Length: 361
Figure 1 (tube, rainbow, N blue to C red):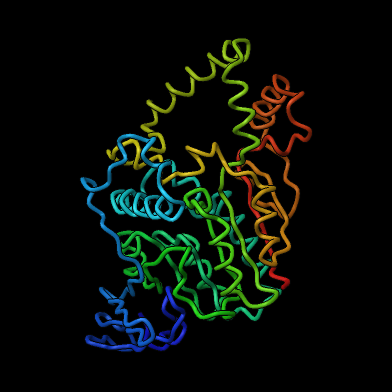
Figure 2 (figure 1 turned 90 degrees about the vertical axis):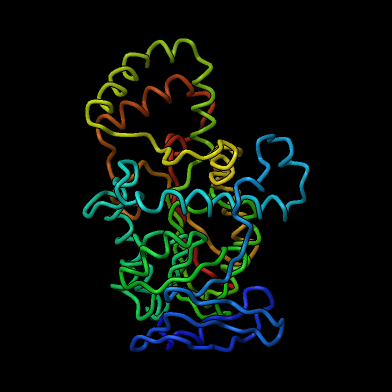
């Protein structure tokens, strides 16, 4: 951690100022040390150059999730803590192979559609800011953070997984370990926040959006992307019960499965973890069957955001209308034909949605 950005950090619990204790320095970087909050008497360590603002019991044995009904008997705060712990366990386990996983390469590979879209959006929204401070929530190994470094004076990544952050830090990126519910960032300092493939990992979105609003400056921007659309999942669920559709699509599934085996591609699942932990980590993907973009928009409006929703299928651009590929149009057309009376607009059948929000109050 560069000690020159230490004044950006505050206590995530009481929002009090922090006192920096530098034990080991390499140039301007604090390798080991700590932050101390005199207000609530809490110490936050700095290890391997990474400030740590999150602590939890990460022993799987003490994480009794084998009976899913036990999850719902807890208070909302307890569920959120379990979701956070599940995310840290899962992402710590997959960190070493994350960048090489075939599923992730579709948005990590340079010049991919996702990379083009991310560059486009960040460059577009940064033009309306001072380009001073960029915060990437759920930064992982630094996919979007490195793009932010090219545009903003200071870019900071935040993630719950220390193993992911260790990789990002070794790439020269500024990162800290914390949760989106308790941001260790000073109020009204950030120009742009990005969240790529993050929202469906969070239980209490209203709390998180309040935090986003707190740290953003007025007219600052929030960019979210790669979250599953509930509308598309509804249609998929409807089609799953259609014998006619399943008979029609069966040959395609057989060919796709054979091609994946031939090319050595693997599914999204990365690690051998208890199923309940993986489900909690992908909370809205598994339990919520995707996020409702309109509900996300409403929650953001409550805390002062003006939001535009973009439905897409990993398009290289969301700001300029892009024609779907022939295969994508064919697949979407077939799905829509079988479920035409359940959706009012074709674009809501697209599986992924992004949002661009401006803080107006």
